Length: 422
Image 1 (cartoon, rainbow, N blue to C red):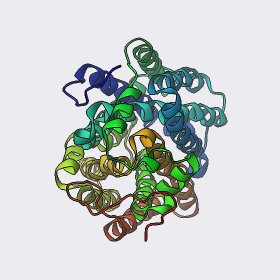
Image 2: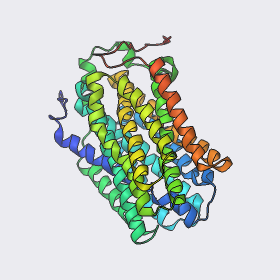
Image 3: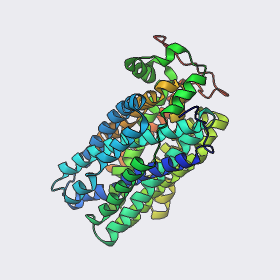
């Protein structure tokens, strides 16, 4: 490919296919949101939330590690082959969930879900960013997360409806099988490689040459702790997934205890994820006003929405506060990605984003353990208070410690080599 032109409009066909791909990734994840936690109690007789949360721990750890290494592999081998590998890994998931004889098998299935999410979502995201170019980076990240989490919402709602009409398994996972097969076919036959876009951007950019040749270990250090702003982003991403974990394992069990059925639970959970569609606008907002304001506002709003879930009673109010927490997530989610992308050289942007996404998605595992222990030792409401408090503390740290990374609005300067931000 010679001198590829960046921009969403100029690459709208491939961009649309990447949107379809991330929507399928979301559907795959959402298909477990309503049904699997209920399977733990009703089919396998698991009463400990810490044990039920083990399937999220396996998912989070594997996804975090694959985020890190898939970014490196994509910079070395290209985006498309890594994307195809991600969908191949998902093929056994529906069969495992249909026929699992014990809860341990469900945790094993979620290892494969973590591989799929860590690889396929990462590749779709970085491809959108490269197709869009620097001037539309926030918009591209917002569209990616919006359609990905809309897929999560649709998957959670649809499998809840199917489970209410038929049973918790196997019927909901027929739908999951179809999604995975179709997504694999799109990846193989229609998706094109976007690595040439990154290389062309690097040639035309003004980044320091030394920055383009950082070793893997140095990129990990920079994106983790050598840059205070990137550390603020990493901790915020880590804590934000406490909310997603609570929605995944805590919301269904809390709402079931309040007397709601699978279809109603699917609506409440789906509304939270459906609010992520606002990332189409909030990602663009980060291009217009800077990254930091929507990040700070979103962390506080998401915490308030989680807190509200246990302070109110009634189906309509639970839908409202679930949606508010989703709006908060939509505000900060794509803009944290943009912060990590702003600070990376094009030739190792995929690796740098992989480091951020590693720390972010370890939040699933840490969150599942902390939420499970809290519920087992106290009551389920205590987990909601704990997650809300963590979001408030994280938001306060970002307000204090993060510099603006958008070049039009910011003061942040990336460190180079062994320099340490103070």
